[in-house]
Each structure stands twice: as C-alpha cells, then as structure tokens.
Image (tube, rainbow, N blue to C red; front, side, top):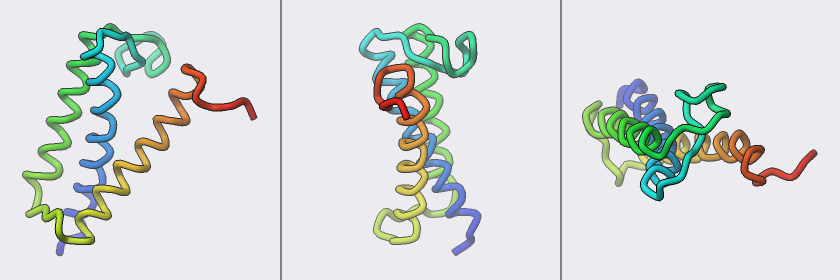
Length: 107
C-alpha cells in the first residue's frame, strides 16, 4: 500500500465532508458561507453558488477516492483514512461555522 493513496483518501474524505453542507444549503435555497463571499469564508454566498461549490467538492472527492489507487471500503486503512478526513473536516466546519449560526457556546 502506497502511503500517498491514504493521503488521497484522507483529503477525499475532507472534500466529501465539505460538499455536504454547501450542496444541502444550496439545494434548500439557503445562502451559506463560501470562499467566494465577502469576506471569504464569512460572508454569505447565494444558494446557486453553494450548490455549484458543493458539486465541485463532490467531484474532487470522487477523483481522490475512486480514481487514485484502488480504494476498498473493506480495507481498514482505506476506510480509516477516509473517515478521519471526513471527521476532521466536519469538526473544523462545526467550529468555524458554529460561530455564525449559534452552534458554539461562547468561551
């Protein structure tokens, strides 16, 4: 197993995790933060921009997971690398976006 494949699966998981809130918000017609807003990552982008950004993230995740190496969901290493990327991006997003949407209590 080439360790670079595991790195690819990790980042594939991160892109997959990032695709979910953007595509879901866009599909529901709701504005959400994106890199294209002002200020980047803090301002709101339109639902159309978020749906497109979510779809692009999903496409990148597909390439990193399905087209690099031979990802096998039954392989513990492959699944852990993907899951860890998914979890860490989710935790980062929860902390970052929670401050705008009331998800984090003040410390």
